[in-house]
Amino acid sequence: MNRNPKHPGTRHLPRGLDILYEDDQLLVVDKPAGLLAVGTPTNRTRTAYYMLTEYVRKGNPKSRNRIFIVHRLDQWTSGVLIFAKSEPVKERLQENWTQVKKTYIAVVHGRPEKNEDTISSYLAENKGLKVYSTNDPSRGKLAHTAYKVVKQTPKFAMLEIDLLTGRKNQIRVHLADIGCPIVGDRKYGRPDDGYRRLALHARSIRFPHPQTGKPLAFDAKPPSYFRQLMDEKE
Image 1 (cartoon, rainbow, N blue to C red):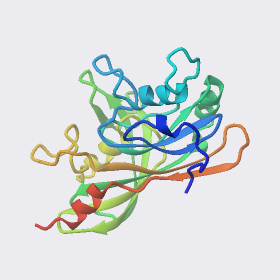
Image 2: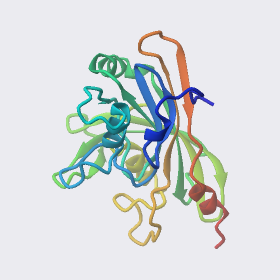
Image 3: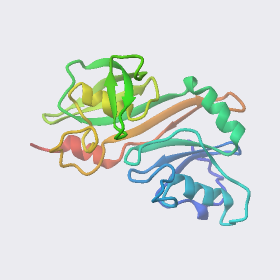
Image 4: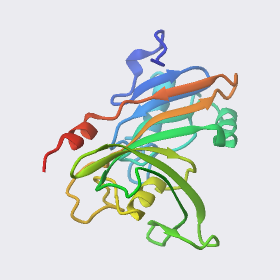
């Protein structure tokens, strides 16, 4: 839908990454689950950032072309991810981040008490790098997560989530707070979960183009894993 049919350098497309849109300012991709967005001390090359840097250089390691990280997704969260092709574009997008609308899909254990609601709390991080909710505004940053139930089975609920603020692990913490942790969440989920993949997907993102102001909208279909979970029998 949003792919440029004259997309240049197709042979350099990174394996596993689907490029949804590209111009001289932006790269918008559909990141698969399991792929890091950016490097870690132990993994610097198997990342979306590294692969897309190689892509914009078209195989020329001496090229000055590079990309810049605008926002991030957790390693096991799939979906739409934006990169900028210059630092000014990155800064422009980040400065106007309140204009960006992000929608996620999650499959959770159980069912929320309310079919539609907004979860709010202050989020803080402990020394073990685990995020938690607190009512003390001096200890955390205010976060809001809106959701609605779109499908229900005896075991799971599928939720559509509007991320109203962008705190670390926000969706995962808030859904665990209401007793409906995301399926496959090893950090905030059930100890006996047993599912190997986090069922969280960044389905869509909408924002004005940083140069022209033209509204842009990109969507990435949830992986088949989500449908398999909702079809799962007791």
